Amino acid sequence: MSALSPEALVALGGIADHQRQRTSRIASVLGNHLGSSVLDYAVAHHLLEGAEHAARARDADHLAWYRRTTVRDLTHLSAGPHIVLSPPPADLLRSEISETAYYLVGPDTRPAPPEARGLVRAALASATEHGFGTLLTQHAPVICLLNRRRLDETLHSWALTRLPGTVFTDYTTHPEVLARDLIHEAAHNWLNDALAAHDVRLPGDVTLFSPWRGTPRPVYGFLHACWAFSLTVLYARRARCSATGAMVPFLDAHLRQQESQFASLSGALTEALSYVSAEVVRDHVSRTVGKVIQLA
Image (tube, rainbow, N blue to C red; front, side, top):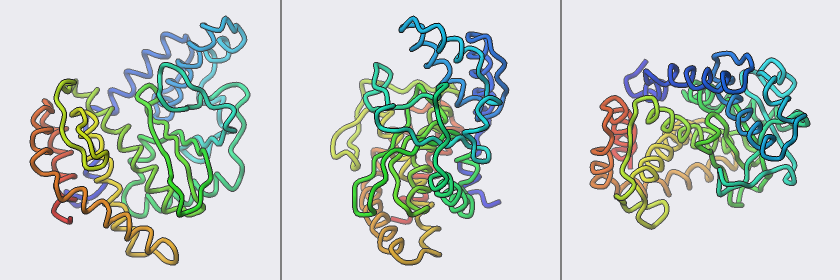
């Protein structure tokens, strides 16, 4: 395995232990019997948030469901090692935990339709072919497909710190586009876990100019953008080699856009990395973003 292969770039000690410890603490709070897999880790946070919602609403039935449910009760939602969801827009939630809409697994959650599951399988296959399968297995075990879009429409995707391991994303009919966006959001989940596992605390009063937002952003947001877009560039470069049809101009446009963003990063990146106290995390981010800057 190359020292700069995608697998090596996201292989970081400490994350698995952090995930297991966090899952164990949630299981203790809920009183259920969660396991120690990455899927358990992601589902545990759905159960915790759902239990809190139910408790506040004084909904005893839903509270009981969230307290007794485990991953073994959700196999009807699974597609391999992932849970795939496709909730109707009316079921999305908004609360203090997120500025954007989100969804929690619940007793009424239904399996995603076959075409959605098939698209996810194809996207995961593309990501795996190009070296990002482990990232998606470990940091996107719950995939929530939102709005189907045309290729020329804006796609929105996001991840929430309160729901690690879950990715929310719009999608097209093209697996490569979904793979790119899953990688981007899984990268955010990876970095959050990496920072937590190594007890890295970034300053909230320092800002750096982000070319993606066109405005100064806190160190945390700046590093997240650098890291997540780096991985999408590395995926897109690999996927472009075997792309056909509409994917050729789409991936070319994505790479051109990102190259212009990364070309101006080096000084601000050095400053941002100086605030990352854990050398191993700093090294992973530095190597990955540095590799993309060299290609820009």
